[in-house]
Image (cartoon, rainbow, N blue to C red; front, top):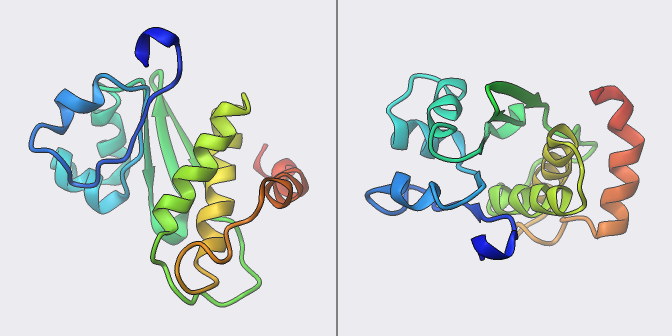
Length: 154
């Protein structure tokens, strides 16, 4: 896959013992803050992202209701969680929904911040219904939400 030029995304949880040996073959690593802190031994998600970026070009760490952050080319980028007008019902699968939205944004050629925003929209909305997938937006809904709120991010 690497030779084909396709971007490689990893979210291995606390996964393999030597996670660094795995992620160095990819382009993006997307742990949540608990996983990132455990893997790196860092004190903060920001520090963990910086350490992980020593092994993978882009380290993205989700920080629950605070959104997500990414460390790429020596720069830290933050994206807040997408605001909700519904109650949080079930956080199961929110990280997976975030990953799907983020990957969508990267594959669409969006900036890192806009891809984080796609992830934040999907991850946040997924918490408003049971199962983690019932409230994930379609691509059309995601684009509408992204374009409606993108000015606030920039």
